[in-house]
Amino acid sequence: MTAYLQAVGLDHSFGGLHALRECGFDIEQGRITCLVGPNGAGKTTIFDAITGFLRPDEGHVTFRGRSLDGLRPQAIVHAGIARTFQNLRLFTELSALDNVLVALPQQFAEEPLGAIFRPLHAARSQSQRRADALRTLEHVGLADRARETVRNLSYGEQKLLTVARVLATGAELLLLDEPASGLSAGALDAVMALLRRLQTEGKTLLVVEHNTRVVQQIADEVLFLHQGHLMARGSPQQIIADPALAEIYFGGAI
Image 1: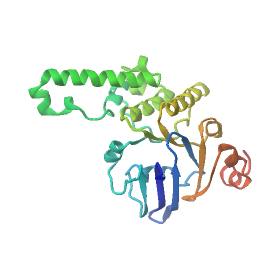
Image 2 (image 1 turned 135 degrees about the vertical axis):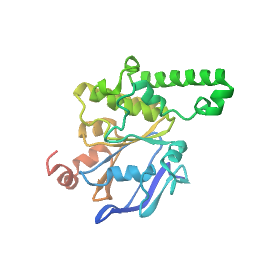
Image 3 (image 1 turned 90 degrees about the vertical axis):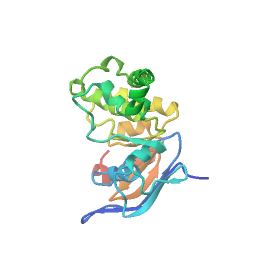
């Protein structure tokens, strides 16, 4: 049976730093898989390799049996994979609604000739896009903040907005880079509830996460990365209970 997402033999160096070393894994559709490991383990580099932000020196990635090798990030979004970033990458001077609008797939209203020769159709299309963006914000609990400038949103709300933007792309596989980092207890619970709800709605999630509470509560499977190589995989309980992994990740204490 063809793997849903599969990475095989990924190897990549940044100058003298070997970020990935023959790293390979696969993930199953419909599950939440957490990618964990100490700082510098290569987790974000994995995301970059999957989503076309870097081309690994060796190895390849397939999605639903289709090679992603050499595809640009936008083409990979069109294939069904979207991601967030550690540094959020939001347009802080625009509204939350506008941030979601720019993530929606391109439509007729954005084509200059269409707007000129079929203005009523273009206007209806743009109105539909705004309605779609508002529904996406409502889905993550931000409908009442739609017209607020992003810089005025709390950090937790900005985190939710990054999830709204990947949802707006229509992608089925979501790669979330530390969605729970830096959140208050209340915001943390809201994010975990959202991720579990997305799974029930048919999304597949690959999540980089450091918070063991989050990993235990949302993960179906955990991939443990160390020095750019997949060192272990298993349930959250198996990974956290492994003393060798605890020594690497937690300094011997969980």
